[in-house]
Image (tube, rainbow, N blue to C red):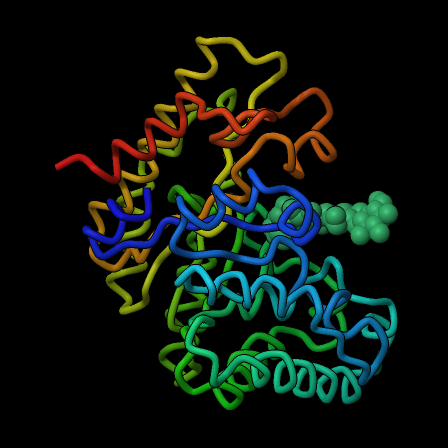
Length: 315
Ligand code: G3I
């Protein structure tokens, strides 16, 4: 897949988990050979990198970055400011202490990899909107209002002037209230000179909810603002058990996403949120659902793999 993606000037990526990367040859081999870009599924999040104030731990993050370096892959840093997987000590800070903590965290985490050529981009803020397009009332928002977004982007730019800085969210693949809120925010931030370079569409889809058929149009309207776009966390779940008809629908959805990115010049690539159904967040979160990825639990390629491969390879 990565050879075909490269021929188009795109990446094809996967989120990686540190434990199977250390322990399973099949996992490591597929991760290395099929993908040109990787994202740490959990290892770069705040709870992993700064579990206690001022105590930074980069073992998991370094594992991912070193793997990528060995395999000539780009790393997309994920994620600096999110309302999940952020330690309790952050959540209880006063406004001024929280601002300082954001500055310090971003400066340390982004700064660690600023000179590393593998690490080329970051999800600076993640999931700031509710599905209706209003601001999510997270502890960030409740303590700081909207200002944390601009502050975080400016801190990331200061820590690595060359990294591509992204805002990332889910349920923003099609044109809807949430993606329009994101569009308006990105437009307004850029008008104010806030360094937002990129928009990430997570792409956590489900075959039973239908495909967002205006995904290409949505990507294009963001591209027209002057930002890069990318699909950052693609997976396409189904009600279990799997059957061949669901596999076919899933393959069609995967193909549609790759085709949309192929058709938009500003779309840098597509990252799948894992690659094997053996390791996926889906069954833990959506009871009775699963099989969202392109390899099965035994590392066998599914119809979705062929769809992604052929969409990357095709004329
Ligand atoms: O590491 C602990 C382990 O020590 C403990 O024994 C175990 C018991 O539950 O939990 C382990 O932590 C889990 C962690 O993943 C690492 O495996 C957490 O419980 C679990 O909640 C966490 O889930 C992650 C989830 O984000 C957290 O919200 C998923 O792996 C990860 O795929 C998921 O990824 C997010 C993106 O970052 C943002 N967009 C949505 C996406 C899916 O939710």
